[in-house]
Structures are given as structure tokens and as C-alpha cells.
Length: 468
Image: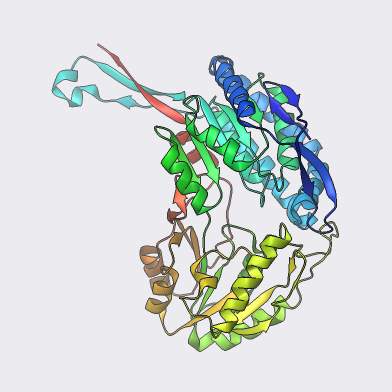
């Protein structure tokens, strides 16, 4: 695959291999871009802002529908590419493509719904004879930086709202899984003015720094690690920022919960994409009186999770993105066991595969649950009551989403008020997300909101117009 700059596919002599984490085969190579490539892409995007601003909302919406149609025709091809480069089971990759297409349609519609408002000027002494209203105008150039775990959906959550608001984009996908995203960008580029969408690949430090510090870039939308997000915030200057920095999402199970539903939520949320999901279930906080029953069912269902070839439709869970990622999970699990956690199932690694794992007797201060463990692990923290559960849920620096299973409305209201997270879901696991909801966390989980309507709003500036 090649980079896309000003409507042209660009290759480089120096390349980066993209490997299949299931069998370590090289799928393809992408160019290893440098600072000059970033400057060219930013310049192209800046030049294309004029064409985008002059385009009618009706025409832009129609173009986005055309992009949707072409992506839909390539649904299976791109889904397979996602599975090959990430290790994600094919049925989950197909769901990702379904969601991506839906997100694009939402953006196509939202492009026609960017409203200003009238201002009652006569509410102030000086405004008695004036008329006032606001209009929304594009920011200009948006830098979109996305990770490997949802290479198309997370990219489209940045690119589609930016385009809907008539901005241009310089997009940098993860070099661990850039192929499906580059394919998407190439399709978009064919329908839009040259330079409206640019896609560059290469070392994150080099390319990312150039994007973040450029005076021609008006907004940075980033999904990734806390360390990188903090670095972006320090370097960005007077730019708008959306930073989605991951989570350590708790699922609380109270003594009045539907245990079957809670276990299903825990299994689905813990092992989706081998646990490599920012809103994956990272901590299971279970009331002591139902903990044994819950854990028994959790272990039974965990042992039925089928791991294997991501392209096999029967596979429930594939490998992690690479062996290094699996080694990190293994280290965290072993550390917890050494400090007193009880291994109930799983816990073994083979290459990039890590078995779905259940741990009991986990303490809130263990590294496994204090930081984000990006892997298929279900650590159970036992608590005596709701107050203890809320305290445990709030005990980490993260606050993205939280799920609580309870049949008691008073309990539900209390957790909604007191849990420090961007979303609190009652009788749903924190992995639940629809692509139109405002999505983004508190504390070290980041700043700003995604979700098409909310992202579009943040991709604009408000201009005041006064007629005397």
C-alpha cells in the first residue's frame, strides 16, 4: 500500500513491513514517511480547504454517500484485511465495517445539519436595534491519528466528521495495522478534491510531532496511549484537541444483579478483540455475596471461548497485535499471581496468543488493575457493598466508561452520580457503544467527545454576525 498526498499515491524506498500476528507472515509493506512528507500532506490539505469551503452541503453529503457505497461494495475485502493485519476474528471485523459504514452515513446526514442560532441582541442595552446570529465555519486542517485495534472505525470517527464540517484531513494510521485504513482513505480521496484527505505512514514520533506542532494544523484528534496524549497536549499550542487515551473500565456486579446477563457481559467485554479495546472490561468488581456464583459461571463460559485463526468464522478470539503485547499481559498476570491473586483458568501464552484468563482474589492496588491491561484478562475484585464497589471503580487514574449490573433503581442512581467516568451504563458492560453517542472519558482517559454529532460540532468554529 502507498501513502496518499494531494490525490496521488506516494511510495518511498524505505518501507515498513506489516505482519499478520496469527502466523507472522508479511502481508504488505507501507512507505516509511518522513517530516518532509508530512509537510507536503499538510500543505496539500491547507490548499484544499478553499475547495471544501466552497462546496455546498448538499454536494458534500452526496459525495459521502458515494464513498459509503464504494466502501460497502468492498466490505468483505476490507474486513478480511482487518483480520489479517490485526488478528481480529473475521466476524468482529465485519461488525467493525458495518459500524464504519453506519458512522459514515451519520456524518453524511450531519453535514446538512450544522446550524447556528439567533441571538436576542435587544437583551442588552446596546443591542436594541440590532439583529444577531451565529454561523458555524470549518476549522481548516484536521490531523487524525488512530491506533491499530479498530483501524477503520476509529479512523472514520475522526475523518468523517471532519469532512462533514468541510475541513480537510491529514491522517496517520498505526503502522501495526495501516492497510485497511489506507484502503479507506484511497477510496475517499477518489471522490473528494485533491488534498481533502491525505494519509501518511511512518514512525510515530517523527510524523506525529510534525503534525502536532504545525501552525497549519487547526485540530488534532488522537486515540492512543496516555503518554502520547500528554505529549500532544504539551506540544499542540493553540489547537483544538480531542484525546481518547484509553481506559481501565470496571464492570460492577451487585447482589441483586441478573447473574447470567452479567456473566455474558463480562465474557463479551473481557475477550472482545483479545481484550485490546479501550472500553473493554478490565476489572470485575463483584459483591461478595454473589461472587462465587458469578465466578463459577464466568470460568465455565471463559473456557468455551475458541481461540485460533482469525479468518475461521468459528473463532471467538485471535492473537494480540504482536508477541510483545502478549508478553506484557503475561507479565502483569504473573505479577498479580505472585502478589496473591488466584488463577482460575487460562494464564498461558504462546507467541502472540494469550489464553482467556480469570483471576480471583485480585486487590485494587495490583498493577494488573491499576493500569490498563490490554489483553484478555478477567480480574475479579471482591467487595462487601455498593460504597466499596464505587470506591474500587474510582481507584485508578482512568475514567472512560463503567458498567453496573443491578435491578435496584436506587443503586443505579447512586452509581450514576458517584462513578467518575464519561459514560455509566446500567445493565450493560462498558464495552457497549453506539456510534452516535457522545464518547469520551474523564481524568486520564482524555478530553473531548467523539460520536458523529458531537465530533462535527467540535470540528467547527462559531462566528458571530451582527446587523445594525
